Length: 263
Image (cartoon, rainbow, N blue to C red; front, side, top):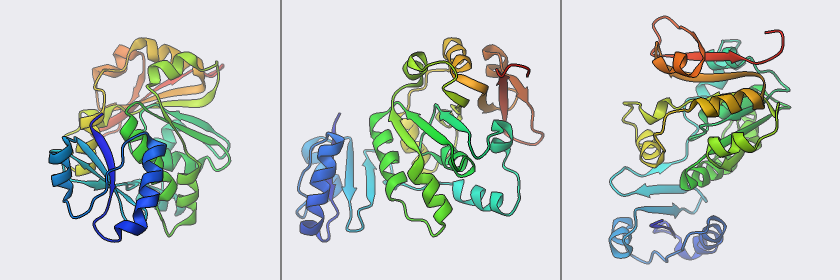
């Protein structure tokens, strides 16, 4: 991978020890910034990606051809605020998870859905899979360091377990009934959203369609149900054996496979 770690231009001497330590943890080279711009470093070292650590220990991710991004939990903050005042969240309704639920998010991305799920599953566990190493590292770091004024949100973020793995292999190796719910959301890989964070993720993500084999393993691994988020009336629901729960006036729907005995 053509990737490296450096520091922000200010307070370089103070930041360097932390940046060097993080670069070792991530397994990527560290390069001193001096007075060189990030673009200059990219050109000098022929880099595609550069992570920049600032004096607040936040990471900014520069990718060639894209706007730089900092980690942000996205709409999860608003969704959790709505849940706190008694509003419904469509995803949570379809997942049907509670305080003790364990969920496997097979398409973690930047973990917005996982954060909301972990907020609800207060004593349960959310495991997120991300196949792209840089995105997995970036999201894991963000979940551990992002500062929120809401302690419940911060606690939910800290509890999520991030695993760098593709879901095909992880599901194959997982024992039966490992999780209550297995969740897939491959939608962002095809979205027209032009936000910098989405474009960053799309540039790093595998675009392979969800396979029937993976769904079969998900059914084995899930104790209760497998959920798929897809564009409304997508043929993927029928191809993969999901029952689409159509949502009027919504651009996406959820597909459900109930695997719990008696469902």
